[in-house]
Length: 314
Image 1 (cartoon, rainbow, N blue to C red):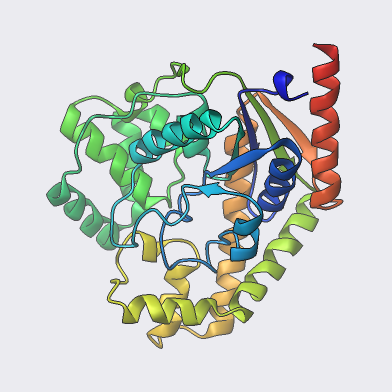
Image 2 (tube, rainbow, N blue to C red):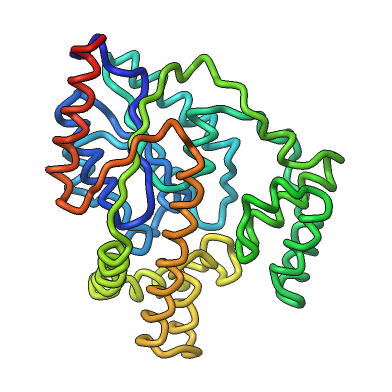
């Protein structure tokens, strides 16, 4: 079957659907290595709140694009694309299967579909001005401005996603062209044929899993992790520290929010985030969806059966 496998296997979908464990089981069965497509897993020291693969999981299977930078270092889609393509090349050289696992749709798209990354270096002065506007008038106001200059990009970015709104406006002002023009697809030869599976489950079950996982992460020491990051000198206004869950727990660490209030807020925002992930991935018609309600082992078994049937048919 190994000669009939796709060039790349991808396991995508919303948070809390069990992508990591399914990916590990598939890597063990197929002789693969995992390329993480998670925009938060790249940061060192941010482990619990990012649901990063545990040390035990990383001993079972080799992971790439985990812990590649510090929270105060910028990390772009362009950097991910370059590093992920190199990881694909190295994995293939070892005669193994690259398996992309993650829920950051833009990262998955950058690697599997390819698009031109805007060649604009970060304009820190402009970016700081835009962040000041976010704090003053809110991200929705900047989203409205993006709607005027790049309606396509605006349709893909949530009005609360200040990081991506600012980047899109920055690219437009620096290059004079909308970021959506730079992101036109042109399949990269380095990737080849990608087989994509998306994990899904009934919304009620997914939301219950999200709620439980947030509580478990707090019980494992997520707040203590945030304290360590702050004590290490990472400023609360860093993009990484403003990410989902970390922003709320920073307020708890500063005595500005009650822990139970923060937990409820994180659960709510994570549910909303999962809904946006569904919307993003549903637009990709190359994804075959698998019900992951029965657990990782059963889901991995179904995917393996699907791959085997395709190999036999071929």
